Amino acid sequence: MNKHDFALSRRGFCLCCLGGAALATTGQWLTPREAFAAAKSQVLIIREAAAKADITTIKLRDGVSVLVGSGGNVGVITGKDGKLLVDAGITATRPKLEAALADLGKDPITHLVNTHWHFDHTDGNEWLNSEGAAILAHPNTLRHLEAATRVEDWNFDFPPSPKGALPTKLLKGNTETLKLDGKTIKLKAYPPAHTDSDLSVFFEDANVIHVGDTLWNGLYPFIDNSTGGSIDGQINAAEADIKMIDKETIVIPGHGEIANRQDLVEWRDMLVGARDAVAKLKKEGRTVEETIAANPTKQWDAKFGQWVIPPALFTRVVYEGV
Ligand SMILES: [Zn+2]
Image 1: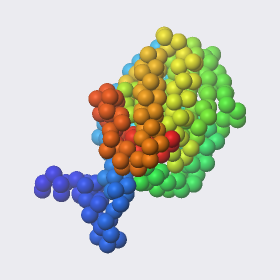
Image 2: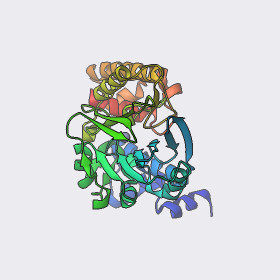
Image 3: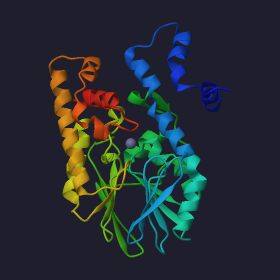
């Protein structure tokens, strides 16, 4: 069995064959946009990577840790009032996540916060809820999870989530403060940013913040124009994060390695530069394909374009938002 057959049987289909399959089904060639989306479904890439990944635990400060390897970074604070998790990872890694959580202490999992509705941050909601975790989220996270939701740039239709996966407590205003084991945990909603459902979670005593997908440290982000996100929202969120923290703050990004304020500044500068370069080409009347071909993000590609969001997809989602 060659590598190609293996991929086919393992996944039930093969990413590199999607173009051909669509041709056979419809009798028509895919448009460049459809071909791009079909070949690059980030949902499948992230799910597959998480299913194979090991979980790495990094202890940060004052009972706050991060579990890396299951979709978005999972923040954890442990204490006698139980464990609070920030983001739920991918369900396929449940056994490894459970083992990593058990290693942090025997306190039960009592709370889960979803930083936004995306699958790589909410996929594990159902099993965590079944273990007793209340799920806190922005009202728009509930809205997107309980309905079928299409993300155009992933070319992916998410079905409605099962009832057990839905948030059980919604943020009422823009901020909310929790007290667990005497420690202060501040939740803050952003105006539409990466999506229309983003939250950050600040562990004030530890001076550690989980900023969800308002930071992909050292990586181009996906920006979800389908559910309220935009490049300008992403930039505004980065500005808000920079204002909220100091140079001692440990920043847990949604994706990428543990960061600090300087990483956020460099990320914000890249976003602003990419926005301006793409907006200029769009204003000149270039199509999205012509804009991608002009490679407006060239100066940042070596640093930020090396993971699941390549320069072409990043340019596309920026173009759609300016
Ligand atoms: Zn996301």
